[in-house]
Length: 86
Picture (cartoon, rainbow, N blue to C red):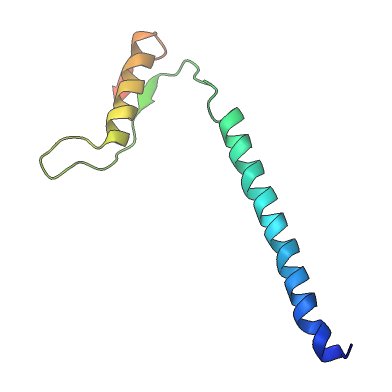
């Protein structure tokens, strides 16, 4: 086998290894987010701040803004803060 014949094989092997590393990191990150990103870490604060998000052309809040607002209201009702800032 000449050195010219081995280059495509080496490149393919390198691509497989790179893909394996990428998939490992991608799946690992997803599992980490799923496990630790869902935990409630709210603590008492003077104010609950709701960051802005999209509003539809008809004036209705986007799903993200509605979710943030509802979460802030729940935290307020739980007594986590005395004020909500939008």
